[in-house]
Length: 533
Image (cartoon, rainbow, N blue to C red; front, side):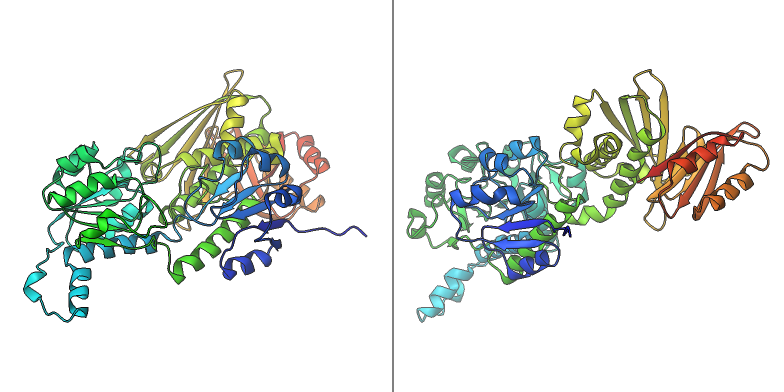
């Protein structure tokens, strides 16, 4: 007897047991912490997912052998050891866990700021040496000071939110973040790094280490800063030129520094250590029990979603969806994927162009992932399991499908969150689909080719185009009973009385081809389609 096997996951670097247990409840999991490179290459073809940290190189060699790989999970922030373009080309999701230790890392950066502002480490050392030097440790309040945040990503925005509660004025420089994100966190946008450096009292760094950011704070940048500026770096080493920082500390330009990351790690000595206004920690930003548990559970959930073909919020080769934003965006993603699936099940001509218009509330967030979801749905009926969220854009381009989108702040008629899709086929014929989000946070189809409706798409549906004449609904109902089709709901939409109408039936089971033929035999039915979403 043939036995169905579950998907398989290999974990080659340690994650928290909570994540391992979660994966084992869904898949077959092999924990191979001490595996050599050669051993991994020999077995990777048997796995649907691999979980690594920073030591395992996941390159084209490994992916070529891992034909079954659907997702690569990186338990942590960095992805330097993973070839992202190669994974994207192969349709493999790469996901990490940036949110899982963001709070821990952000809180440490804030702690380093407090330590500098109030001389906490110096005062602690003085007391341990038997002194009571109250007058020696005059600090500065954070209240009313300008906090300059370099990098308004996950951790930068987290720090901004918390420090604004202390009455700080937050400004930020991040050329890769949308204006909407600055508005969302009520942070003033600096157009250049120089602008930020000249006016900030406290500076905190939250950028990745790249060729662009290595040494981005050096002699010239420090010279621009206010005298006595307080600098914190809990992001990555080498972003601050430590030789330049030494000179800034020596001449008093830099009032204090807080460093959790360093040019060389591990580090046992540094010229910076001669200054008692430098607070240092050994890269412990993510070192909390909560963070490690979150990393394990989060990467497990990313892998589960990736294997199942669902949304992977932390996929690095997809548009970023932050945890707080996903709840708001998810209904639109689900709805647009379903709307996309309708076209090739209703019509047969190849698509040439897609225009998507977002209205009112639907226009207020980053829509890249929603666009991708539509393309995935559009191509799925013809590409089957060859299309996913990672390669949908690439496959659409290869298929000659152009896409553009527009945002409108105003409502569309009576809808405050409508998305309208206009599809142009190769014969220049146009088709329209419109959807909105209901009060229940469900996607509803409200228009198709000019026919008004109010339908919550279900997994199985029948869509019919019929003459708008008396008795047609009864005949359709009789046929569904004859063919054993259980109808959950029925909706009818028309343009003008006595012309044609669209009838949509939400049904419980898949509809056979013979049943569809029975519908078409009715004189009043112009065409009928069985739909699966």
